[in-house]
Image (cartoon, rainbow, N blue to C red; front, side, top):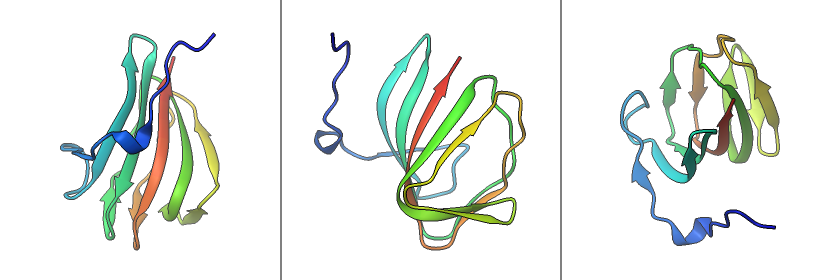
Length: 104
């Protein structure tokens, strides 16, 4: 049984705001007590310092690429970042769209 279905193409991009780099856009697909699922649109020149989270974080790069800790991650790459693990800094020279899931 399907609990939630969202047509991402029907959602408008919103300003992601702090702590994201100026011009970063977001589509929120899910936000509840168990976590959050978003698509983040990183602008060309994106930068974010290293940080940690209290939840596990998953990334799937839909378009473009970003760099983290000297390694480039390209379209189709999946990452699982465990809670309390420092990750970053992040940069994206050309920009990217990333599906991000935070969960307990």
